[in-house]
Length: 142
Image (cartoon, rainbow, N blue to C red; front, top):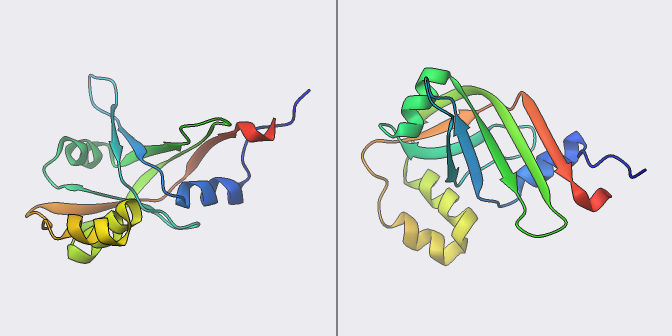
């Protein structure tokens, strides 16, 4: 019988801190959850941070639900994923430095600077979530 494929707390936090496009899932009354890809930031032991427009469908859902889930995965075998869910701990306007940091995380220095030069928008917010519940699988443990 193969061993467990569940990641340890340290493994799942390290995986989530790596660069992956996440899927945010937000409850919606009378419908299935809204689930869309997002860039996110996470440091082990910290909060999951996502940038979005303050009047977006994502933000409307988050304001109503007060919480969200984020799932990150690998795209190639052996497959791995981490899902974290919890309450929103902070919503604040984002600034140029927030966009630059997020864009650099995903696009590198040059691409991040070019992306951030496009502006911050007028209604952007950074939403932080404190993970309470985790799911994880690492098929390389088989």
